[in-house]
Length: 421
Image: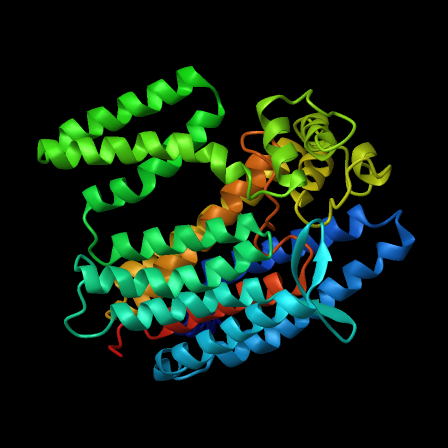
C-alpha cells in the first residue's frame, strides 16, 4: 500500500511539473480570479437596475468568447504573431477611421461601432495591434531606436492611431498609447536621458495644473536631473525651455478638450467645484470606497452601489464596488492579483529568447499598469476622472476580449520561452 501511494505521489509530481513547464498557473489563475471578481461586481452594481442587469450576462458571454479566442491564441505557432502584426495594424486603423463616421457617441466620446447586439470599440483592439507591430519593428536586424529614422518610424506607428483616437475625444486611451510608446522605447535601448526628455514636459504640464508652487517644484526637479546627466549647456537650456513651454501650452491644450473633460480637471483641482454635477461621480466613488471599512458591507449589501448613487459603476468606477462590498481586504486582494499578473508578464519578458516576444510583453505590461493606475487613481481621487476601464474587470466586451488575448499571448510565450523565433 505504501509503495502504491508513493508511486501516485511521484506520478502526480511529474504531471504537475509537466503542466507548470508549459502553463504559467500563477498568471492564469490570477487572471481568472480577476475576471470572476469583475463579473460579481457587475452583477452587484446592476442588480437593482433591471434594464441594465443584462450587462452581467453580456459580460459573461464575452468572457466565454474570450476563453475560446484565448485557447486559439495560446495554441498559435510563434511565427503567426509576427506575420500578422502588419495586417492586424492596418485593420485596426481602418476601424478607427470608420468609427469617426458611423461611431456611437457615449459620454462625449465617439468610439463605439454598433455590431448586432453589442458595440465594438476599435480603440481597444488597436492597442494590441500597435504592440504587435512595434515589437515586429524592434525585432528587425540593425534597427536602432536611438537613430532619428528609427525614432520617427516608431513615433509614426503610435501617433497615427493615437491621433485618430484623440479625434474621438478619448484622451484616456490616447494616454495609454503614449505609455506603450515610452515602455517599448526604453526596453529596446532608448537612453534614460531620451526618456527624460520625452516624459518631463508631460509631468511639468500636469504639475502646472496644480498651481504655481507645484510648477516651480517640478521645474527645480528638471534642473536637478539635467545636472545629473551633465549634458552640454545649450542642450540643457533647450530642454528646460521645452519644459517651461509645456506648462504654457497646457492653457492652449484646454481649448481642445470637451466641456465635460475640462470640468473633470476642475473637479480634481477642487473637489467642491461641482459636487452635484460633473464632480458627483468622483465624490460618490470615494464615499463608497471609504464606507467599505476593513471587510466591506458584503456582497449585494453596499448602500452606494445598490441605491445607484454612482452612475456607470459597472464600467469606469467598478473598483468602488469592490471597495464598498469587500472592503480594504478585498481591495488589497485585487491589487495583489494585479501585482501577480504584472510580475509574471515581466518574468516572461525577461526570460524569453526573442526580442519580439519580450517587447510584446513589456508593452502589454504598460497597458495594464496605465489602466490600473488611472482607473484606481481616479476612483480614490488621486488623479482627474479620465474614463478608462479596469483590466479584466470593467464592463465592456472589446476591452475584456482584447485583455484576455494579451494574457493568452503571454501564456503562449511562456510555453515557448526557451524557443527563438
